[in-house]
Amino acid sequence: MQNVDYALIALLLVWIIVRQVRGRYVSPGRSAVLPLVLVVLGVGSAVGAPWTGLAVAVVAAELVVTAALGVLRGALTHLTLREGYLYRRGGALGLALWVVSIGVRVLIEIGASAIGVGAAAQATITLSFGVSLAAQALVLHRRVVADGRPLRPAARGRRPVPGGATLGR
Image (cartoon, rainbow, N blue to C red; front, side, top):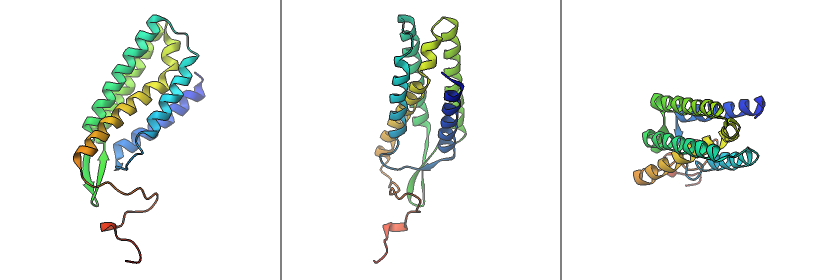
């Protein structure tokens, strides 16, 4: 992986973390797009890596751990009402879980390099974060469905109108 790739991943990760820690309205159907894109890009990157049995085992273990951390982040995301709509926020706990997630990923990559499978671990960084975000999104989606409180309409760039009123009524 090139330094530019790492920089782009870092910028994307910072953007994701800031949005999750600060919070935002829950919007229907949008949480699956980014994880899916990251998983597809990650699988594409992994194709060219040198794969051995040990590399497969290390990457598989890492994906299980990062998925578990995603499940934990999804389970611990705060769901509240703001202006009558469901709002999600990770807060300080969400930030701490992201720090743990990144730390675990770095430690796994260091360990993978030490045992000679670093190239496979490096090639799957995007896949790893995609799987983690997908697990988080799945858990959060199930919580939102079970919660039942109203979701903010998907009106880009506009504030929702209280009571769903429209012009001309």
